[in-house]
Amino acid sequence: MDQTVAIIGVIFAFSVIQSVFGMGLLVFGTPTLLLLGLPFPIALGWLLPASLAISTIQVVGSFDQARASLAQGRLLVCLVPLVAGLAVVLVFDLHAKIDLVIGATMLLVSAIRVNAALQKRLARLIVYAEKPYLVAMGVLHGFTNMGGALLSVYAAAVHREKPEIRGTIATYYLAFGVVQIATIALLKPDALGAHGSMSAVIATIAYCLVGRIIFPRASGKAYDKAITGFIAIYGVAVLVKASL
Image (tube, rainbow, N blue to C red; front, side, top):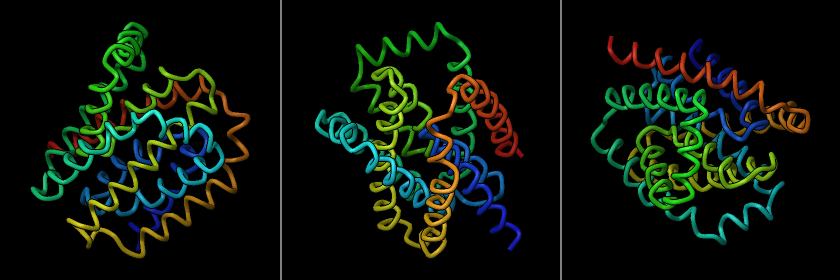
């Protein structure tokens, strides 16, 4: 019961963050639930419906941006490697190794976020090698549920306005969530259940009560600094847990 209450609190808190900035629920929720002792598939069973609920609301609110993302066809480049990566994790039960990959990924992302030169190189990479970048993002998200870290960089590289960036992230997350849940339903159906419906309701409440009010007033600079620090701290925590 105590663990369930903690999970609900985690989902509500990070749903607020995702409602405002387009990411946060999966990037922080995944390592948090792993630190609470949940297996990777069960963590996905809690988080994906919540992420799907918020992304659906955001896509409906920025439908033109979502339609443009779909029309460009880039989204499809991510989905096949995403499904393949997630299927490997579920079939071969790579839970312990996934903890290590997630921790290392978070440290790498935090290093990129504090280094302007690395950010510029990554932006140039996206321009000149967009499809390979999207494939890598799909693989990473399939294996770790952490592709949002690369997705935020991608969205910021191809768009300048805050609504466009959040709309792109929401569109990708919506598609990611649909194919991830379908893959889990096929390979690990026990990871899904009523708890997923509950998490979707919690996320919707968080969005309606807090997220949609804060978003127009949100400052990106303060968030960028805070999220970089949290990513680094979480990365270390996950690596320590995986090594115990």
